[in-house]
Length: 312
Image 1 (tube, rainbow, N blue to C red):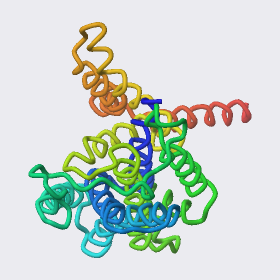
Image 2 (tube, rainbow, N blue to C red):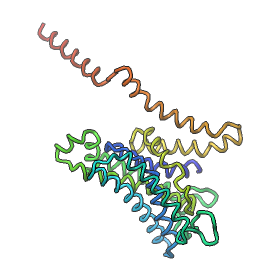
Image 3 (cartoon, one colour):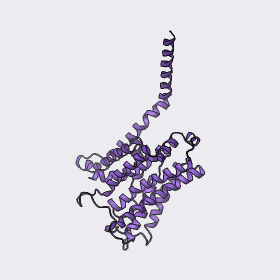
């Protein structure tokens, strides 16, 4: 249960990163998108008094909007000015973090009577219901993560918009020549990516933590990049990678307690995963190995041999 709980924000944020990857964009800003989603979702959760159902729905919508706007701004800057999305998203991460810390020192967000930067507890009507009862932390957010995976899979493989995303990712110039509106696709894909990361922020404040702190995003936004890479930027691959990394984080503490193995070994394993993913193209680049050229050359030789044989 703890593995699935921790995997929930990793899956949704990883889907946001993977979706951008498929469109040829490097969304390094999932961390900031989670934070902005958490800010809006938490405020709606503790500041408003609404009926059950409606309150949670507004929390969910607010979080998705927060992440989508934060990601969409990057898309606008990329499409309109040509600003590199990696630089912009990294800067947006810092802006979101320090904006959160500022808010937690204001009367609007700081819990009354507290000197530490922590918000009031969200209303019970604004919290995700726990799937298997109060003895486990697993909540509705995991089911939404499954739904998000199904949605992204359909979007990329069955929809016209998904085809445009993949075409832009494969070759933006060819996509533009084919009549695809590349700037619109860039803005839209970053908006959707931010909204998916926003689900992770809602899962944190309305499901797992139930409050807003400056550690609401932890390192989920950065781990989501590794999750997307391990999943080869495919929806279900990202889903499986998110569960694997959730198991790493859930088991790390018990591993240290029961066996004395340092918890940092989990970071080592995660780093090795990234290294192994990057190794094949790196080796090919170093030694000048191009599998496409080799395949083309082999095909040419085969065709030539067939032609020669036919002439004979």
